Length: 271
Image 1: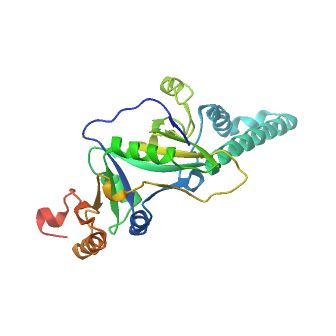
Image 2: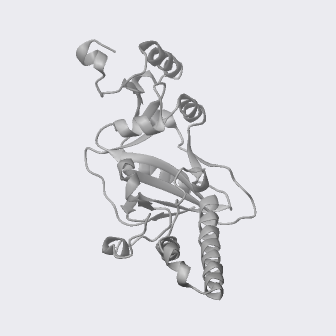
Image 3: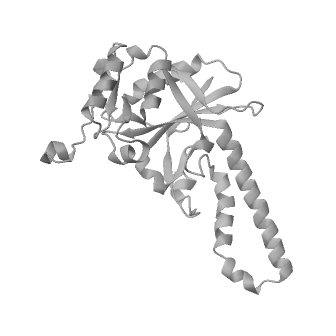
């Protein structure tokens, strides 16, 4: 598998890559020792995978939506032509995005110095955990696994930081987007998602002959990797102990740590 960076990036010494997940995802991770990649069409954001060239179609559609009140003075023929043009652009925009979203598979991580309460609230519940990895070591491990991966339907893995711009609504005057220098699709998101501070690994399917509902990659010898499993700040102690006992059966109990986010009970002795 070919390995590419979307664009140059670096990590700060105190940063980590975090993956927030429920217990079923954790059990899958521990038992399979695989990283799970989901297709972009399974994500909440409908604009996942959008490329800079697609934004011009979106700009046209946004402009038409704001121009409806001006259509009253147009002739019937002009209205029909405008309707046909809008339909053509909308179908092209939709088709381009659908093609990308079903053939791009992402493993998404939060890049940060500390835990994110926003990420706990958005992507988990009180029974959840977060994986915490050294970013450079995780990247190295995934890259090595990709080089040993052999599947003719997947021949490219791209990694890098997601960047956030004024996409919805699209601001064509945003010079930062014009000069972003993205080499691959899948690394642009709207500013409304900025709190995610996302780092991505993207596996790209090179053929549509077969439909995949997911993609998975072996980390190879998970036991030797340096990572932590952080339990939700409001997880009940007995549930934390359950996870501890599961990890102990594999000799991984030292990897389990409690969240460092203080709760009201810890500070005020009240729930």
